[in-house]
Length: 440
Image 1 (cartoon, one colour):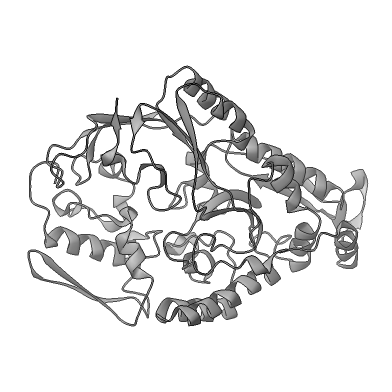
Image 2 (cartoon, helix red, strand yellow; image 1 turned 90 degrees about the vertical axis):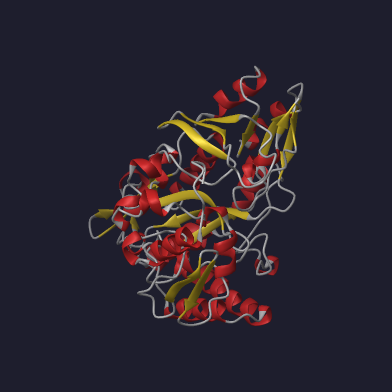
């Protein structure tokens, strides 16, 4: 550990037991002890060995264990806390002990995180940098100015609207993911009675042409996708196009469903207006442009869209504190990446709502999808898993709990004085190899 004490199997066993505890309510998709197919036992035969026994096969767990997001945490620090309190603790916000290449010197919520070199890092001679400061800048125009003035060395997840400006910055290089693995979509909150109606959801997908986003907003750089498996073996380009663009048919479907045009050109049913709120992260010019396009397209079929955006920290906050996790949204837009394995059960299974530790923000529930998810998680045969993912993908396109927009390579910029900078679409993304960075 960074304080010089040994990291042992005791710490790992404590960490895995914490992840497996339903009270911890983790959002990693780690199998819990309450899951019929989850963790059976975690034993520690000696100081350097931990044995994790599952109740049934789970072929997705390797990716969870490999990712830094599921890192070991110190038992000495967190062992006395109740599982439900750990995520809210000061130690979670600003750890005093860790095992990575850097330790946290300071953290100012919504402003910055300052790291310093860990003198007890397990890889001799690393990291090369003495420290790193992460500046939290939510406004894309401010990020561009900071890069142009040399105030920051690197920036990631940048706006395509400023791509030409990034490329024009002297002394900096612009990067894009070699193998894009994420997707952008809007998610429909099915707890809203209006969006619980499949006719309404289908009408929304039929009346907004995603090619407008790809060609007009992303200038053709983004790629279409009809599944959440981009970058993995389960991706299915053959599913494209996902939706038939037919605004006339969409309007007629709403009419047949009892939604008739009234005041202002908007539709009403039993005295209720067909009005929805569209939310995403604030200060994102790309998403702001998409919102305007969606609002205009859906107005054409009589759907009233109000735009209400939030700071990313508030939008994504876990444990019911965020807009998504609390369900305080109608239509939510964001990007996501599954990781090394295409397992998406935390997004779509009935028991994976935020209150139960999952990321099923839509509250979608379909027994066919649940069955396919159970099979893909338990069968190591990739051919079988592909078949099950095909069932999942096609059922989602039929039920429309979300609308896929595109898959796009993340844009990053780094000063030419920063060496070994090589952003990845997976895992810790931009900083996956930060211990190897150095400056000249």
